[in-house]
Image (cartoon, rainbow, N blue to C red; front, side, top):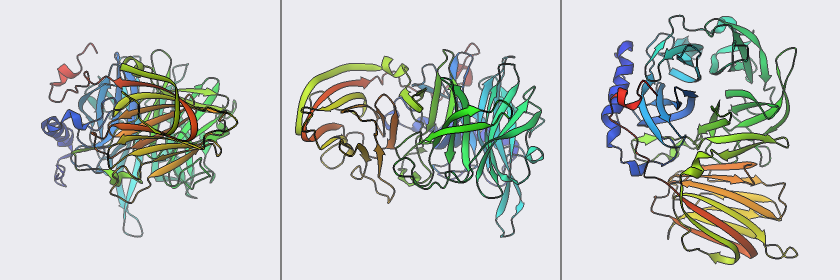
Length: 524
């Protein structure tokens, strides 16, 4: 596709042009090409989730968006709403780069709040051109900006930017200062954390405070990378959960640490507490958030019933070459419910997924040695629960594997070696045509003889929840959707319990060409 935004495009036309473009072309995408219970780009390019929030009775999710091509471009905010966090309806583009403070690289990531006065507030990073660097490359200025709206249309605040370089502590970059996560404290005042880069090239998370959400002051350096892991820490999010302060970030340029962290762009969860005097975050432990290959840029929200729910971009900057020929690229993970137990972050698919289950097939105490397929256990849009154990504790099995998204030529596999307590997710034989990373290993140090797995397949992706969500592995699968066989394998004798559900797809009818008043009535 050819970009619809040219250099002579008037700023004021950009939102309309983006809305007209997605309205005109997205309706031609066949629904069978898309995932069923994961949100994909309406058309064009999608990356980070933004503005994940609950407003006027519906869940709202915005996302980094370039509708005109299936590659990264000047960032807009796409928009979708859902009643159940699984089935999404698209709304028109919410933000376009049409102001001097955001018409450089666009409207970068941010967050959203439902305000007491009934408005929906978006807080985002505006990126503007700021001259040339000594090497001749274009410099960028990143600032934090606001927009207010009714759930469909948003107007940028006339006082933007509300947080700029004047509020930055000495030594912080104005070019790498982004991804605000905003919330309201119990006393009604506002706080936000923003990712920054210091002069040494390592990330800091900065805390800002405000009485009214419009006028902001610097609070403190909330957290410092101090060369712990990666360089810039993108997409910060912090909250208290089960009596523990949690900080989620997405580090760039990571180095691996055993099987805990992956090279390149990954995710990091820090558990700790806030210092009562300074307000700074004090880390006590750290872990990866996801142990797969396609997971980045987490964002959470607090649901009306009190659940902390997280979503992320189901992709990675190091593997975006996996994109195919379709007219959309990028999707989100399943929303996940979070908890903290025994010093670890646990994740499970939102409970709404259980309501979408159909056609239960179950097997208990299946003796497994060699390869085995089970009648009724197949599919590419399924929720599969497995328990694997040795039939004889004195002679445990040596390896267990499950092959899925399988046909005569292709498959993706998950293997477990109990002696090493190691899992491996491998898409080498899935039909990849690019030289990208295709497998990831994950330690299961607390293995006690029984391995519990929950595997959610949704056409082009898999999410694997290990031992109640203590660890999760997420991966995109390029194999044609017709490859739906599942095969179990054991080297040695194992015993298998299997429970498989189809995930309902009948209600997955996203509305493409509706008028905006039909898409989100005033009562929503």
